[in-house]
Image 1 (tube, rainbow, N blue to C red):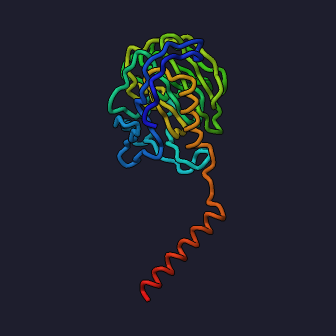
Image 2: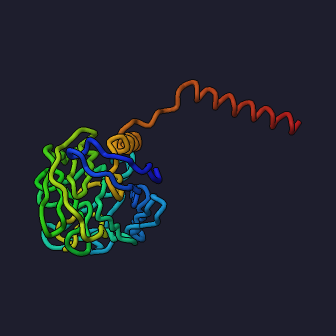
Length: 263
């Protein structure tokens, strides 16, 4: 999933978000986090790796078999008060025309703010879970609005936000979770799992987070959601009896060929 096509028009998001070019800016999957170096390798093709910065006590760890189909998740913890750690992007994601963000997460709490994205200065996109809802701000400037549904703390959820100056649209597990007014972002995204001040760190498990510059079309959003479902929800098929039998027969035939050659 390197990049989706550029959209010509956006019709159904937030009452008609304006169209803009879209590029997959960063893609972070838990299986690509190195707990020794603290580097979360970006697989978007942009090499925009995220590196942990903060107290060793709160360094992320990888939880094997955490998601519904047994995939890994990155476990993040934060102090009860004060500053925790964050994952700093190698290159800032600067796009004033808006973003589309996807995350497959299980927060351990919805209170207070649990920032998934943030910046190093004010007016960046801070996308988080706040008071048990998905929510976003122009960082330290204005709380623009939140979704309607409660995000559970006992199971994973696929959440996503498409936002620009025309409006914003939330989705939860493939269904609409409300729309709010939009905002222009004057500062870039530079952090994953925290905000500019370091006080709204995310606590919980993150299987993957993808950030696109620009607003994806409804069709593109559905395509990305389907890819997340296939990666983390859809059960991995067990080998069928016929497949096992075929594999066994193949091994037997190969063994007999070797025996003939040796004879």
